[in-house]
Length: 485
Image (cartoon, rainbow, N blue to C red; front, side, top):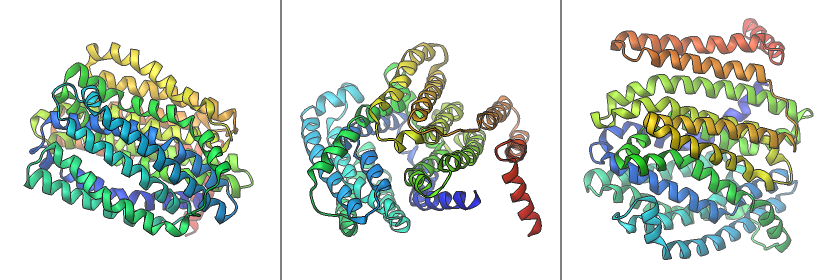
């Protein structure tokens, strides 16, 4: 088990390190940015990110999932390279068509996402960035599938560092505001699109296979409504807050998301590593279902601990690092971070779907989330404001996790230790509620309580693991190993 965890963590660290520099730098620069960008500016950025995410779902046509599955189960390098080539051609063609159509309707898109009276030029720039970013997806996946994690990490880190420097120049020095944030992303993407394709050219087959293209499109198309609904669901909270409460409140909601970045970084890193690692376990392990279950248990325990830390410490940092007009974001952090935690759970619980050969019903997962979150969010917003919206998103994500698990189980059965997972999750909630209940204490006692809770939770995790029927023997072996050393 330790070997499996170290392999997963090594991959996660490689794919996550590439973005951690940007996350840390962006986090440290929040005090600087919040003095050059108004809350409404953050609201505009959040809406543009939402639009970009939805557009990319149409451009990719589900090829990220289709190609990764084809590559993950392929036994020959030629088949892998051919899949990447066909996937890149499909994405390039769909991206060009989507980009042209979206540019025609850019004014309407601006009204929908930003509201009347905002600059449509921002939308046009983001549309181009979406197309280029999708072109980079296949080379990124090729590097990941080839286990060239260092190369992938170096490229992503260099790209994000360049983007960050340009953003500082355009926003802080030249005072371009939102235009500086959007322009810096596009300026960086143009050369890096060619860099990615150039570096990965040897990993591509560079031959066309019509039958493979048909298979990839058939498998990938169900992911289009799934991804679109997923993006709508993930961004629903910000969009509802923007339309019902205004851009200032949407900006505070976005700031709360930014202070949840430590957990977002971990979830993203684990998710990126899990894409390929689950196929590795499936092919290499004799009891692949048992291996997937055990690894998931430890990953979920680790993610829950990170959520506890973020939910207790990040609200304090909001109050410390931002001007007073952003302090409303502090109360939103635990709920928004909980949503990120639950999305990490979903990646583990739905592993069986990706291992099967039929993804058509997958849209039911995100449809469930939308069915729950829309009426619940509309009901909660007048009563509890933005916090009610964030909480409704978490409830809907729980519903998605359940439906995703049931769907995955119908394709490939993985037996999880639900008692252990449930106790770890509930224990984390108790710790967060306890810590936030005393948020009105003086600073030093409050920080002392937070520190104590963060030290106690790992002990609770070890106790539960040691007493569980599924992990007891494994924990004894670990303790004996440490004792002998």
